[in-house]
Image 1 (cartoon, rainbow, N blue to C red):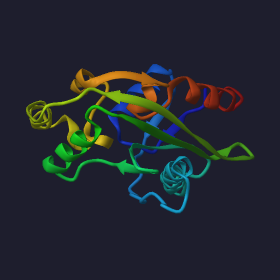
Image 2 (spheres, one colour):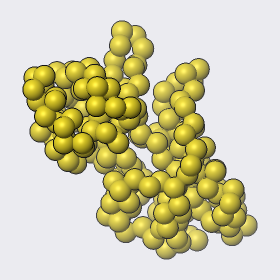
Image 3 (cartoon, rainbow, N blue to C red):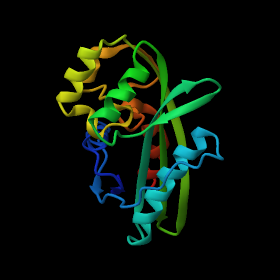
Length: 196
């Protein structure tokens, strides 16, 4: 199977790639492109993943590069309120208060680009999972933020960490919430990598 470049420094994404049995090298993208509010959220997340993959691919010709981006979208009237990584502990507490006792969406955009022999590849998709959060007390929120776990996670929680205490149910792929949609990513990559 062909080796990929993973344009992400996320330990969670590396773990998912390992579980899928992918051969890859980690070269994180440096760009932090904001979501384009003029696009539907599903497309905007994929465009950020695309920017990350294309940045790394530009300096690694002849390689296939996988980029990804994950956002948490809480419903705010008719518009989704996007929750990225918290800026500080108070921002993390604000996000967790927002998610407490409600349902939200987690979207992960994926983009694969680069050269596969003489073929140029540039394609991607967005997957989403619905998550129902438990109702949290202010004390629970403060105790969780004090662990430090929420600080580098979209939406200020880790479903695969201590945040699992607060997940009542999910509808969709657990791994999408972690940072890469497992089965769908495998179905997407397998024909490309096996024919390389």
